[in-house]
Structure formats: structure tokens, C-alpha cells
Length: 254
Image 1: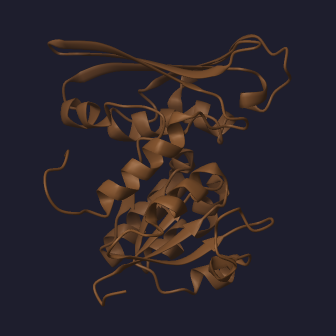
Image 2: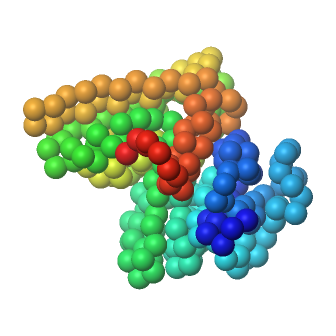
């Protein structure tokens, strides 16, 4: 590796973490330093890259940590990570806790580091961010099967209606899209969330409605459920987010 390589650590060895590893393994200008896993070594990841102890991972010198695990990682270690380098967190529901958001923002300001919010399983975060001063209403509805929400197969109907903050606190592993929408747009308290269970639903669906001064749009995104809390599009979007924040050359999308 060259002296200009970006040193990367990955926390989480599930579908998203492994997809990011596979995409970055041979990328020029990138050095993968570790992957933190809590179980057996994921297929295709070199044994020498695997760590199982969080304190050992936090002691590594890296430029960017990519979190693809659980919100508790950000609650417990987000500020520590940001004191040393940048952090891209897929568990962005963690910022629905005011004390966690405050700690993250304070750490970024103190160290001059950045907390990246990936778009995950949804699109148009740039439009929300660009228009937040004139946007007056954002509503997001997530429709999943019960098991995809950590519930029984027969779970049915509206499980939640309220603010995105409350949705993130109630479903911390299932509504990272709601957190990303809130952070990009008009905030956790003004963004309205709905979570709906549909028995036998094979896809994970997100419907976003936005209104504002002179604007209105609707976005629907659906992807095949992979089992657990992720849809088929999520690992692909995760890889795209990481590639964009690592930069590159040529024509790119801003």
C-alpha cells in the first residue's frame, strides 16, 4: 500500500459489513486494517483481519471506521471513534437519543472529524438536505413482514405512528432509513413515521412523502428481504456510500 492509503476499520460482519469488505479489499488507495466480528469468521474475510474485542479495535490507528453492527456501538463508542478519525454509521438511529447526538457532534467539533450518514435503503437525501429550509412536512412509512421487524409471522397492521425520534427509539434496528431521512431533512421531531407489518410480505418497502413551499414529491423504494433486517438493495447502497465518501477521480455524482 502507498503512504497515501486510507486506513479503514469495519465494525460488524453481517451482510453489510461483508459487502463493504468485498468492495474495498482490492480498491486502490485503501488499506483494510480490521473487521470486528462477534461470531465466527465471515466467509471470504482473511483470518488475520478479524478482531473480536472492541477495545482492541478502538486501539487501532485508522482514518475511517465503518459501523455496520448495532446502535449500541454508536451510543458506547461513537465519540471515542470520532476523537481519532471519521465514522460512517449505518446504525444512525443511535442519533435519535439526544445525548448520543450531542456527544457525536461535540466529538466532531473537537477533533475536526466527520460523522457520515449513509442513505441505506432509500434515496433523495440530497433533495431533503438542499430543501430543508422550505420543507414543511416529511412522512415516511415502512412496510415489512413481522420477522423483518423482529416480531411474529402473524404481526399485522400499523405498529407505530408518531415522530421519527420515537420510531427510532422503539425500532432501533429496523428504521435506520427514518433516521437518515430525519437527519437529512427537518429533524427527528418534525419528521413523521409509520411502521406497518404485513404478513408474508417478501419485500421491505419505504414510502416517503415530502411537502414544502412550492414543492411536493413521493418516493417509493422496495427491495427483496434477505432475512433479518436488511433488504437486497441495502448492501449495494452501502458499498456505493462508502465508495463516494472515499473519493476517487473522474466524473462523480455529488
